[in-house]
Length: 67
Image (cartoon, rainbow, N blue to C red):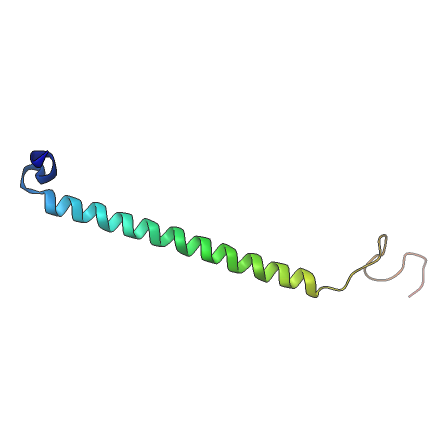
């Protein structure tokens, strides 16, 4: 097992690289999760702030020829 962990004398470098990659990937995952959570809360707040419209209501001028 020691031979595997030492990896021919390069074990410290290799395991440090694996550790760094793991830390970076975990950081990216946490940042992505927090960004998604924040944007979801903002979207919910925007939806709650919008006025409710009646079903069938249209935007803009009426289609009955009134200006």
